[in-house]
Length: 461
Image (cartoon, rainbow, N blue to C red):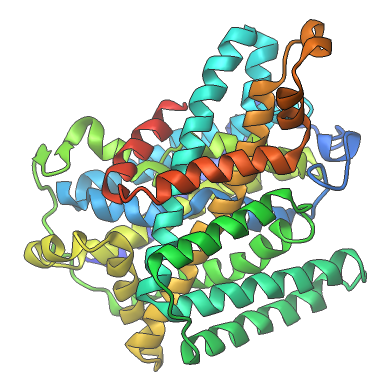
């Protein structure tokens, strides 16, 4: 079977699932276009901000995707491409998309509160405490995992580091232009896309060469600033601009696969046992976000529900983003399945991202660009995926810690000074999250963090 057929079948399956099954779920939920959303009823200009659906889709998609739908399927390909492909298709439509849609609606119907707050209202304070403790530990793992992934990517592809830093500055300019100078979205977007192209060119020509530890320190500083800054200044505009880079990556991967149509050299089925463990449950834990992810519920209820302008936007933003992510997972799987078993075994131990970048770089090279330029482009896009997950996870971690420390109403008068500070001061709470994640990221235990993250992520459901 050729790689092109894998992509064609996946696109048709995802479109059909979104259209038919998505409408069925939407009717069951009972969406109301005119029902006021928390972004309007609780608007504060920092976290609760009504947002255009195209901007929010970019934020949500960028935040849930990260590098997991790339790393997961490539790592799990040790079991062969058939079981991973089937799980991405059926898991993405019937589990992942429904999970994300439902989590967003549950939060909307509870004033944009997180899943932890919803559990408190429905099941009690004890259940909330257990869930938030586990969720907070998972978020710290998420941050540590992607700090490591981004720092390693920037170290190995320094051009990506330069471009990513410039993209952050471009996003701030874009946010100020749209929200303060009232520049119309279309011309601002066109200028923003032009800035993306410029940053890629500058990054390709002026690589920023730093050590992995130096990059980790820079990234920890960045996520602290991104978490405490109002969403309209950095989070929204950066994710919106990044979404175009990410969509370009998707198009390059899909069109490149159809155009090149590489053969699938990796075995269809690699057996029930592998060096990463047994097929069940390791396959599902490893693929993670490409088909089903508990972290998505934290994003949907942590940031997206606070910015949704209308309930009519809930299905395209939640289900749509999940299925786009599943398509990305299929493309990532193709880049692994192109390799022979010996090539795969020799390359996978050096990381999944280089396999993906080389695969997409090969696809892009048919347009006339060099393979090196294609690898740089793919590496920047993957790093931007991970960066959006980083700043969103840090912000959600702040929410989770504040909710965890929030005492019941009858005890709020007797709360100690430290607990009161952490509950109400976003700077102090964020500092705690960043410190814990930074200690884990700098511990030198990168290889052992990913499987723990994958297991914790799936247990969030």
